[in-house]
Length: 106
Image (cartoon, rainbow, N blue to C red; front, side, top):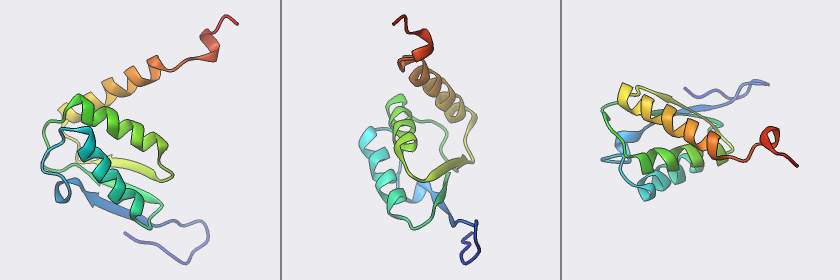
């Protein structure tokens, strides 16, 4: 999908992860994926994880860090339940490790 010319409508692009990476294993591979994603003119990017059934924790951690720092709105489709669960667990661990002003005692 690519939308242009209307006020308030942004462009979208689906990135088929399997076209860029053979496996979801290392941080460097994740960086390669995001370098491609960041080079796209689209504001919204959908990462299609079709065919992947497993990912390393280091890949998932890097993916979440890069996604958080990106200026693009990034979402995922076709996530295998194992990968979806890993994303959820690692995201929770990242959030719990952040300093919280609510928990600060001054």
